[in-house]
Image (cartoon, rainbow, N blue to C red; front, side):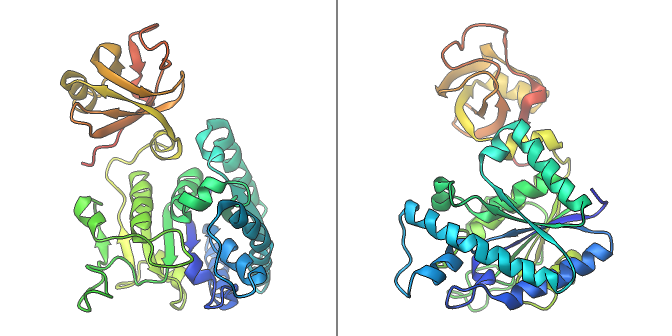
Length: 356
């Protein structure tokens, strides 16, 4: 990868217009910025939303958007080629080829598949092709119902070792309050740490078509900044939005600075890409050994375990009061928990998640 690389995600409400069709002007604006940035040595990957909305605009005949997963899958299959055709045309105006990459949770959960996805994106970059990434909504029904492309973008940023993550949306950035409820709300220009108070400023998506919201963007920013990635939430429809975000234009969007002591690529994968299959609760002595001394988790420190897991699965590690303080790859199964070596999770396979 080049020295500077970025993942830019564009939300559904920014990619589509009031009727649900693809807003070509926004795509051209993004393509223009990407082409310019690439000429300056940047590697850019685009994560796009909007397939379901565009698909329903094509086949819905003005009726209410469906909510059942099976219909949404079919609608996504209609929208994907429409969306990609629009992206292809937008980038063609700047003599740039694009390639579609559809990703599902499996591509991040399994280490081998994760590295394969990384190789595909790297190969596209070496060919001079801009990767256009989306969730594989046509088959990943759970992701339609519960997923969002903010998280996907953060995972892709970690996957390619990006220096920046830009989340383009229909707001100016993170505000001090909901502007619909408080007209005096102002933009928070810089954030050094994402804590509980900051998360309370965000709510669920208020869009009828988007699956994210500011809370999902903050969660994505947390994932990225823990991996050493500068993150910006900014308005998609501003002129040269991507270029402004990456050049740190004063007063444009909210910039989240990387956390000190960034996680390695592998530990970022453990922390954020792999789904947990269970949990273990530990005593105070084990908590001290993990948090203060950087030790491995031993079986003697575990007071309880929940869920069904096997050797190599990811599990959450909870303190005696139920707080999730870490996550790791376990070396025993839930059925044979008391068998084998005393080391339950080696420190090389363990990530502390407590903020600080």
